[in-house]
Length: 78
Image (cartoon, rainbow, N blue to C red; front, side):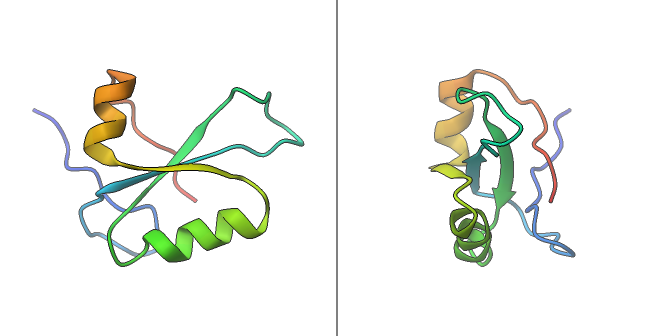
């Protein structure tokens, strides 16, 4: 039985539909990708948060990310 992916925005319990792949170059190797999940409502806000810091690397539909990664590993939460 799999869990429904939930948005990573603080206090949000909506179903996630986006994966925000990011990397902090001060502490991660260039190929490392950490992930946050986002619902439609929070995708832009979370993207801007990461983008302003230069961390955002990719925004992908969750279903495409899962197909590409071939795993259901839980993402990090902010």
